Image 1 (cartoon, rainbow, N blue to C red):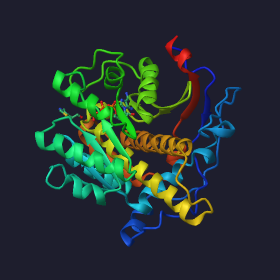
Image 2 (cartoon, rainbow, N blue to C red):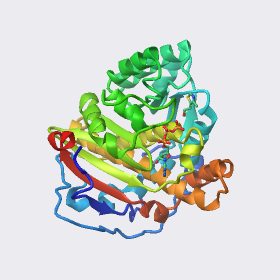
Image 3 (cartoon, rainbow, N blue to C red):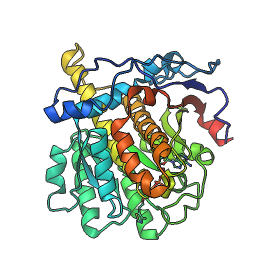
Image 4 (cartoon, rainbow, N blue to C red):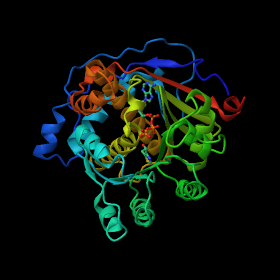
Length: 366
Ligand SMILES: Nc1ncnc2c1ncn2[C@@H]1O[C@H](COP(=O)(O)OP(=O)(O)OP(=O)(O)O)[C@@H](O)[C@H]1O
Ligand SMILES: Cc1ncsc1CCO
């Protein structure tokens, strides 16, 4: 695999987002939640600049990837102001933690996962998160129906391929869902590698691979699905494919306590769905107020989804860092992490280290 750390441009995520408009559905509760992302107006730091071409035809990282370009704090604020309703068909281990994580970032959870009402509810939800970690027959049917609605209504959905490879049945079901082109696939390194046909899988729900080792596999998976692929670990990788190139964002931060608390990854999938929903609301808002009333171009959509995915991962990285300062171990980390998701300010989001790079598929195979 090519060394994608070469030629990377480092940016801070700080934003001068002071008056970002909400997606037009603000409630009093949403306004209250919105106050949790305060406005520090931290300035952009373009960091270690170099000559790498970080501009892509998606517009990602144009102009050396300044914080203003990424607008991470704006996106956190948009989630709080819009309060997107996220339908989660997820495993029984993490349902409560994921619901609380959604509430902490300002979104609204609904863990409706029975085929009797999953499709009806999908019409109301802004986004869907599918995680078959402890899948029941009901969940499998519910997932098929809810995904169908998301596709019909052009709403985002996230697939978390928990422990893909652990059994033949699980693997074939997750592969079938992957073929339905999720807006984003989010998993740990072993899950993403196996799904891309490049690895043996992890140990149960845990990864045995490093993120660095699977960036090429993630890029190939992104090319296959046409969406975003996000790999979590010590330094997350968020990948999108565009023509013969992949654009790769690396997000650092978090805490080594995060993999010791079950559900940090699963709740990241739910929060990613919320960020994607807020991005779609922003697209709709822009189109409603602008002159361009047509549908969103695929390149623009990919760029928006990519940036939304970076923002969700930055939110987790900053919250993990903050929570670790207050935690004695995994037990105290879990509630501290929920508090941190809620309390983060724009300055803390701005301190998250994000690196952007592009590479050809040829380079990634080398
Ligand atoms: N060593 C680490 N240092 C910092 N952050 C980490 C580390 N390992 C994981 N994380 C963070 O923890 C979160 C979850 O990532 P992880 O790879 O553990 O997910 P996962 O295996 O799918 O989790 P789970 O199955 O428990 O839900 C991500 O935000 C990731 O950045
Ligand atoms: C521990 C566990 N077992 C099945 S799903 C799950 C949570 C994965 O995060």
